[in-house]
Amino acid sequence: MLRSGAVVGAVTEVQTPVQGCASRWLRDMEYRACASPGLLEEFQVSTDPPWDKLPVVQFDQADNLTATFLEQRGVDPHHPPVHYMPSASDLTESVVAGLGWSLLPKSHVESHPGSLVEIPGNAVRVPLFWQSWRVQTKHITLLSAAIHAAAQLPD
Image (tube, rainbow, N blue to C red; front, side):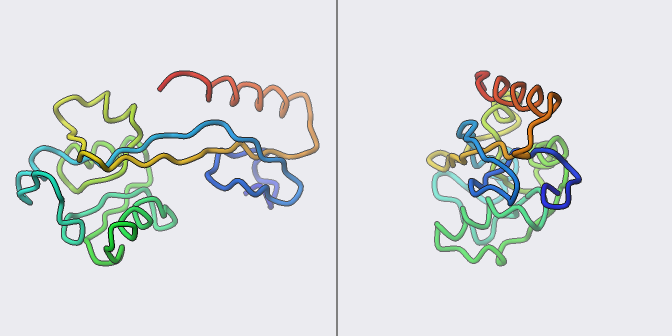
């Protein structure tokens, strides 16, 4: 969307700037592997989950966070069942409902005490970058400043 000019900026995990844009690190975002207590009970998970069998809920098919996570654990990311929820709130609510596990931002986990259980030892940190057009207008400058200020807020 940056390339086509449809947007003037984007928060992304990609550090290399799109042609005509500048990239600046914002912060690292922590994601935690979480599931509902019922799902963990159904799959009899106590410490080491059966990642190859446990259903996954992810944002969309372009979301590679869970695929990378599974590959790092020696699991083919195409093996477990996957459900797509292209809305952050729907994704979290799907995990709360027991549809599958997901990597969720720390703040989502903390806002659902008792409904979400963190699978211990499975946190992931993702660096986030603000990419915006190099040609700065007053509005882009104000937007960039607001994005940078928001990134400094605590989780």
